[in-house]
Amino acid sequence: MARSALTRDEVLDTAAALVREHGPDALTMRRLAAELGTAVTSIYWHVGNRESLLDALVARTVSDLGTIRPRGATPAERIVSVARALRRALRERPHLVAMVHERGLTERMFLPAQRALVHEAHAAGLRGAHAARAVRAVQFQVVGYVLVERNRERAPAQSPAEEELWRGEDAEADGPLARALAAPIDTERLFTDSVRALVEGLLADASGETGKEAGKETGKEAGKDTGDGIVGRGPYSQ
Image 1 (cartoon, rainbow, N blue to C red):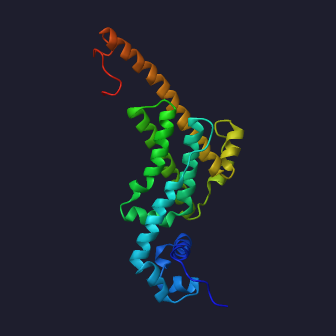
Image 2 (tube, rainbow, N blue to C red; image 1 turned 45 degrees about the vertical axis):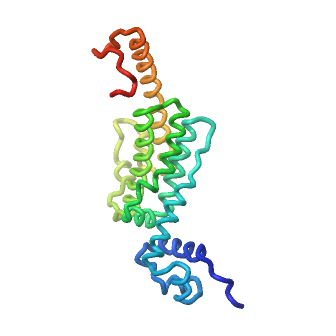
Image 3 (cartoon, rainbow, N blue to C red; image 1 turned 135 degrees about the horizontal axis):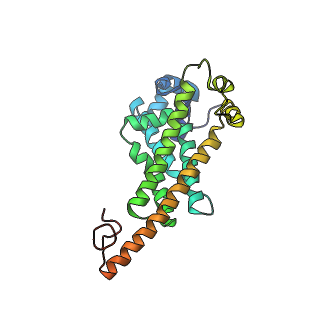
């Protein structure tokens, strides 16, 4: 039975799958053609040479990370949902993300997620430097967590392993803690808990700062010293 007409998207899908599983070095035009059951010349016709193919995969990866959408009833829930979706996207395509980084497009790749975080930070009442700090803190938490996960997965087998070490500890007479540290890590739950705690802290800090800034504005309107030696300093002037 004759093969249906090959499409550019089909070529990119198969190429992306090869890179995800084996890394970019495994992506050759001959191997890609074999996976698709077509001639190498057909691959060239659809995507150009190998370098053009890699560029197309990078562009698609940047585009894919632009599809993240917040979910949840509150700004805090939606910020956590963006963080979880971003982590999942990075975890699913480490080799492709590395290719994006090598081409100097990392910041462009993260921009849509940052925009979503900015929107939710505003919805939570954050503005200016406080909102920027929240956006960057969440992004750094996601990227740092993913790097730790990848390093743990690629590290040589540990002997003794963390679980073995904690079986012999009493964790300062806290048996349940020692047993919990000796148990396998639920990385999904740990990530969600850590991001939620971070977001709650950022929003709580922002509420306190908002109150302080409101007091400063009141002092400004009255022409009085705001309490820090500067008369009428605005909320975003530092």
